[in-house]
Amino acid sequence: MFLENIYSPADVKKLSIEELKTLSAEIREGLFNRLTKIGGHFGPNFGFVEATVALHYVFSSPVDKFVFDVSHQAYAHKMLTGRKAGYLDDAHFAEDSGYTNPDESEHDFFNIGHTSTSIALALGLAKGRDVLGGNENIVAIIGDGSLSGGEALEALSAAGSELNSNFIIVVNDNEMAIAETHGGIYKNLAELRKTNGKAENNMFKAWGLDYIYEENGNDVERLVNVFEKVRDTKRPIVVHIHTQKGKGYAIAEKDKETWHWTMPFDRATGKPTVNFGGGESYNEITQRLIMQRAERDRDFVVVTPAMPMSVGLGAAEREKLGKQFLDVGIAEEAAVAVASGIAKRGGNPLVVTNMTFLQRAYDQISQDVCINKTPVTLLMNFTAFDGLTDVTHLGIFGLAAFTNIPNLVVLAPSSAEEYEAMFNWSLTQKEHPVLLLIPGNEVTHRKSENDFSAIDTYKVEVSGEKVAIIALGDFYQKGEALGAMIKDKLGFTPTLINPRFASGVDEKLLCDIAKTHSLVITLEDGIVSGGFGEKIASFYGMSGVKVKNFGLEKKFYDRYNPSDLLKELGMTSEQMCAFVKENI
Image (cartoon, rainbow, N blue to C red; front, top):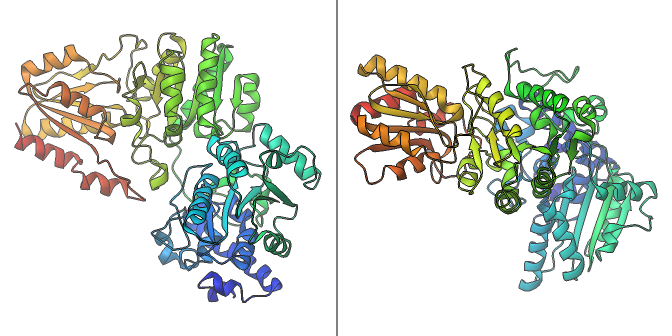
């Protein structure tokens, strides 16, 4: 094997072109070894193997610098930069994150998991090089629909007009985002592919960038020739390569959307080897609610920034929705602003994506929606601490980020019935912008009210004494468990409150609680700093009521075990019950 003897990119340069082809095949076997066992980003990495080999053959990392967009195309890069054990040896899987990480290697420059960032980051490296007097190559790598992101377009514009030095942008064109691509940008890429890069309409040249096209983006010899042509260029240039997403695995080549990312699977069949049981899921409930809403409400429109599968909207559902569905591409800011326009015109828009990605649209939520009080519903998945655990994809900051925007009603359902009721209410009412959190725990069932127009009105589920537990959203069940343990071990029944509204305080109820309770416990699925619980603590600040906020610390957690984290935070029922015992 050649891969066994690759300890740095210098070893890649020792191989012949034919040996590079063998190395590429061995890299795919390494990818299979890791991904069949622990899962990860499949299609992007399989499609970029030859390009990665060619880049390391031609350029000299880490002197020459590679910046990977999203960096879920960087597995082969990791294998060639001293981290092959994380792919070939099962015992070392945990040593490598799914993204580039400067803590792992000098060949990585940024810890990146969000999209459309590479061109701007690399442009900064190039500008810094020019100011400080360097002469290395700077290479930005972007693909999987990321060009539609505003940051990418802004950086392309700046590079074409403001930089007159070495800067290489590799556009990995596999004709896909996660799902199909959307936007006029990709029509131009298609035109360039069709004309072998010779189309008169060339958006990159329009921005002032040089341009070169390679149709055979999975041919390592062709790629070596292309990269040798652009190495040490004195002008910003786009290298547009046409690749096949999922290359080397027929199942993934055929079904590119499903195989963007995968759970552990059987290589022969492509079937998952992890069984999550046959119970209900909030993803399935969400899909049902959206499709039912579309059938009975012709003014209803789903808007997504390239994340339809975050709520289970596969190709069949998207086709059925027809004109009631709009994918704006990877452009969260546009998705939110477009939804505000739909609402202003009288429609009922629903924006769907993951919480971590909504962070990019903070200003549009504040300016385009909330100042204008347009009744947009923002439906967020993966808001929980035990959902996505990579440092780049955490949803735990959403409560602190968005609950403090004026006019925005943030709803945190505690059961399937409450979730469905909030979903329908938010799309029926015309008074408020609403951010609705999809619960991150297992599906639970409890009766729910259907009207939430009395904003910031909490619901007392259990009337008790001494201690009030205010348990928000998908942490309500943790509040139930704590209340049961207090009753069993401490001999009294605490009050249990389902706040429902994460963005405001029920002042009347809290005043009533203060008359008969000495301790208030808050539980929230997010960071405490700036979050829901601190609003309660602030309200009681000058009173004699003690408040303990349970939640996560303000830090960038990475690849943690959720159960272990709860123990570390003192948030098991036993630990919280012990706290109550010491403080009443």
